[in-house]
Length: 212
Image 1 (cartoon, rainbow, N blue to C red):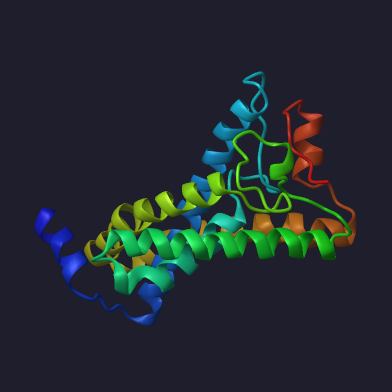
Image 2 (image 1 turned 90 degrees about the vertical axis):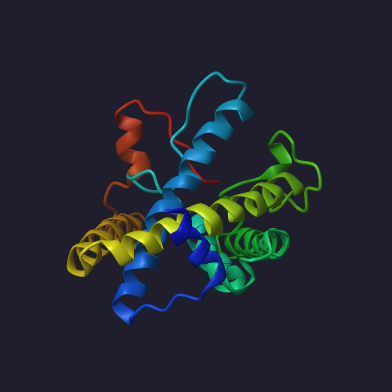
């Protein structure tokens, strides 16, 4: 395993288009879930450690901006993986820009809707208009190291060692389930006035953060 990891750091890896698609799908699943776990824990402390809240806008424990950010970080930092400090620095600024643009975009398009607001959170030093703060980009920068030196090598390892058809079936199926959940709550439920995730969880008595 150590030999293979050294090979990951020192050599470029090439995969066919389908295998690369499977790797991206797996990254989307893992990092979206990772982001949900982080927010689930953080906002428990942010709320005074009184109650856990379901985060995100889906039925499944997954948040889209973390998945989007992971693909962006992979594309920006893969060639720099021999230099962890550069991976951190690039990710620090890139995720900060992504978070600010995403937050501001939703605020403008959604007539004041905020999916997060650092103005009302703990540890919000360096806060810029509630869309980004130093704590958030520091966390994303550190998480990028986990991504580049643990998660991506693991995905590469599975892609190389598993049967190709099985790897693609598992990764694409898992990603498709999450994407349908996202599409349903983002568009389909709105178009047909069907119950969304927070409607269902609210009726079940599960605390759910509703975006405002």
